Length: 113
Image (cartoon, rainbow, N blue to C red; front, side, top):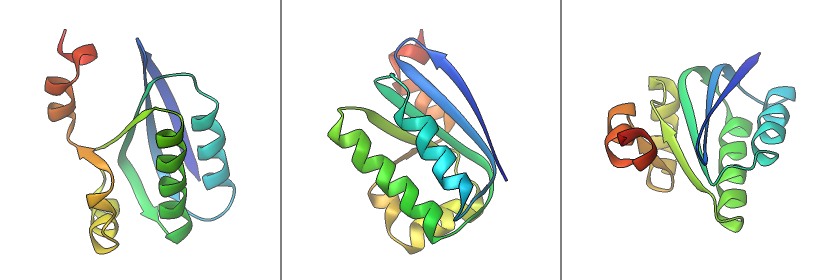
């Protein structure tokens, strides 16, 4: 089961995910929640994602493509060790902007204020 919480700051939507990002309803719920938002910047906090499969990674790639097509900046923060490992193995760590919260806070005008 995947739990999704959202926080908004100015034109930034922060989504925190907890649970498993795996094939099934979870990936559909994630995409539905994210593509219906109206922010110009999306931050995905994956710190509490304890499991991810190919469908979960595919959903992240689909979301990245959607964001690029709609002029939305996408950043992944604090991927859990499992998520980071899979992103490195699949070379997705070179495709996504991956930061720690500290980096995001210091580099983003919304958070630096």
